[in-house]
Length: 77
Image 1 (cartoon, rainbow, N blue to C red):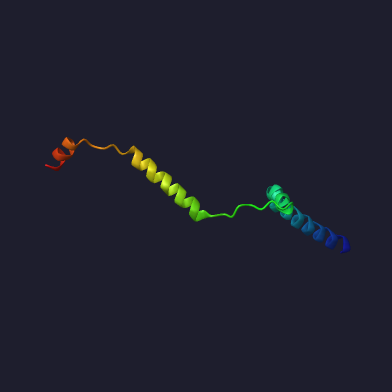
Image 2 (tube, rainbow, N blue to C red):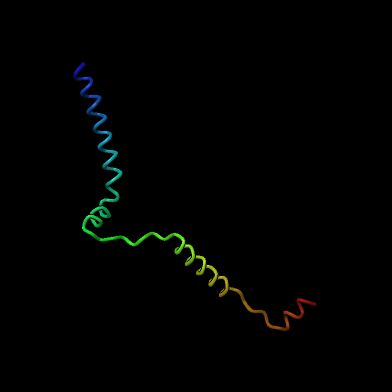
């Protein structure tokens, strides 16, 4: 019974350890940089959205062609 409980708890410890390692491993460089005192810039999703919308508006504006005045009058008639 003692061996069975040791195997179960050792397996649970191993699974918990691997879960922690797989969660931390992708962020390891970021953790080290923060520990060394390098502060990351603040995440500003609204600013990024505003820049993207402005870029899209400029592309749309640049892609529209201006009709000559004669065509405009013919289209209106």
